[in-house]
Image 1: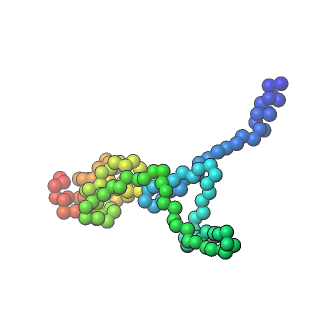
Image 2: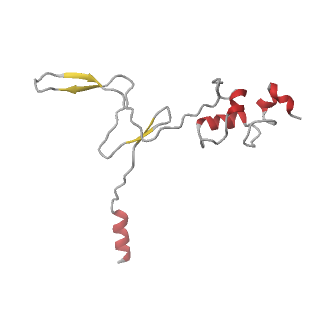
Image 3: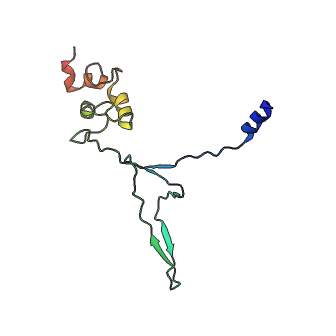
Length: 135
């Protein structure tokens, strides 16, 4: 009897629900609701409107800008130094925003000695004009 019940439970289909997220280049996120759908296009999208007069009008759809979450704006350097440059590495605060693309860039380009910070022992720092302070 137990095997029969176990078999029935295993064969019963379970409904899986998953949320759909839209992530934007600026770090923002929007979560689609239950009856919402998404259409991704790299060109203009038009909506068909049919007023009571029977005419057919097409109106350009504005891009969707709503967000559930806005990523914090982080200014790494005031002079907009290129990511991975010596100036950028000096100004970057490791792990301030968790694991981000900038954090991965820091780990790869700046923190080469694996100690989690940027300074003496890192190849780029030692080769810079600030490297003279290192023994």
